[in-house]
Length: 112
Length: 250
Image (cartoon, rainbow over all chains, first blue to last red):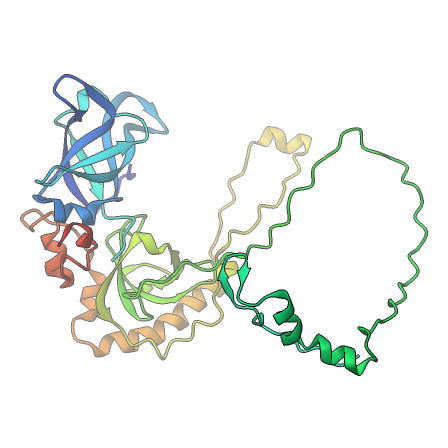
């Protein structure tokens, strides 16, 4: 995380929320998570976000690498359904307590 | 021997892989073997082998390795620099997406042979020095600065490599003193280079109204701005198709 930076806070990521794991009615597959990206409401719009990296950031009691904040990196893999939900794969599976939590969807790797 | 002109295309066009258009006897005629033979009295000309230079006598090696070690195959592959996006031309204003200078708007100078982009703030405007940036971590805007007055020829990847750390031999005395922190000072040469590049750039920037303030401001996604894709479309004036959504559009 940023060390004591004063001044402008720039947000260069889009907010997303974690809906849960990819699943059918009674089985879930935790290697893929479903993410709702703010403002994205259709399958066509999701194509911009495909491949973009995301980070799930959470806090922990023990300091690692000098920080209480930890991160799981992942990327948007494909759209899920017709209304803008997205499938994502993370470096390690997201923990179940992350459901409903925030995810940052960055704008890189960029292709514009 | 008559000078050989090596043909680039074979005289026998391929119908399917492995099957040529002409038969053996037709090819014999096409290649003119009959004419060569006629010139040489009915026989194909035969040249004596060029005498090989005397190879020095090899002594039997003193050491034979116990195991047969496989030699790795030769790799003559030379990587090319990454293909530059059409939207990025010298003088384009780019938005940096990550790293220390994220959100800063910056002027693109040229692509280095490693594929990275050479970029400058200019330093006076937004504090970004001459720096390398990867193409994937950058959004190209449609704003362009006139860069013809700037000379960027003497910058390449070697200019930006870190200096190799000199090995410090730890004597007995130093061991107990503890490590002294060596401050890496930016060499004066680099500061001068920055000034010369920026001087030419600043003139071009000051001509355009508001460009200086634009470059000084940071880019940020703001609340209330339509997220998703619509903000991108508005800011960059691009259609959904250009943003890469074409797979899902009919």
